Amino acid sequence: MSDNRVYSYSAVLMGSPILLKLCSHDEAMASRVFQLIKRYEDLLTVNRAESQVMDINHAAGRHPVTVSRPVFQLIQCAKAASMVRDSAFNLAIGPLVKLWRIGFHGHSVPDAADIRARLALTRPQEVILDETTCSVFLQQPGMELDLGAIAKGYIADRVRDYLRQQQVEKALINLGGNVHTLGEWAIGLKKPFADAQALIGSLTVNGQSVVTSGTYERYFEQDGKRWHHILDPRSGYPLDNELDSVTVISTDSLDGDIWTTLLFGLGVEKGCAALRQRQDIDAIFVTKNRDIILSSPQRLRFAPLDSGYQVIDCTA
Ligand code: ADP
Ligand code: MG
Image (tube, rainbow, N blue to C red):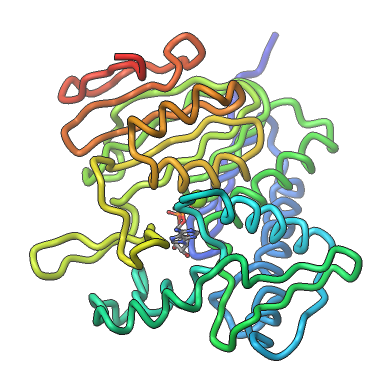
């Protein structure tokens, strides 16, 4: 007889509620998973005075800092994504994130002159990497790496690896918006700007990562406008287009995390075109005028749950 029970374990880490679902009761496993998440958070955070990433930031304009191989590789990958032509992803966005303070106490729309000044400190080509020594050097004083857009994805992949190595066949980890799975799971997609329980649809995946980035997650209102936390590295202001959210389905959560930001920058039309070149990445766009656009209706197992939204495919 098969036991279909699911056991849920939760914690608050990285400023987000973390949820782990296992198919057997195993407190010890859950606490090892939370420990692992904490360890990686300690390496990657920029919201505390100390971490390997903060060591790099503190040495900006002065000297290179040697970091551990995994941190170096993550930064290498983040730099590559940032150097793509017209990329909306930028690992050096730190000075602008700090200026806006979105999601933190004391946020307000900064002066245009301040934004311009900070833009000059966010050039990804001025993040100098040395593979032989695993060192990272920020060329200008005041430059700051911010891996906030990909840290959860990277850590979700490490949790997946760990669970797999422990011979776990079915599990789900949700790191506040980054879901990763072993085995088959149905995942609810949140309705933008509605209460936390409201869903626009359900997505069934098997062993894949599902990352959602939405303008409704962290924002503030000022001058009759919403200012959210995904910044356009070209303008220094929050990305402003037809999108409320993007969900990316991929094998690795790190790719999902990078692609949510890239697709946010591209918008629906260019985003769909970019995804036609990538069989390994799928996306669900949710627009302000209540369209749900599937990049690949054949591959995605998506069931709509809200009649106020209409589902269309990328080719439409
Ligand atoms: P969340 O899952 O917390 O909603 P995202 O994955 O959408 O986060 O990333 C948003 C975070 O990434 C911001 O809080 C900020 O730290 C950082 N960030 C904001 N804009 C960019 C950008 N254009 N490129 C890279 N990182 C960004
Ligand atoms: Mg992200």
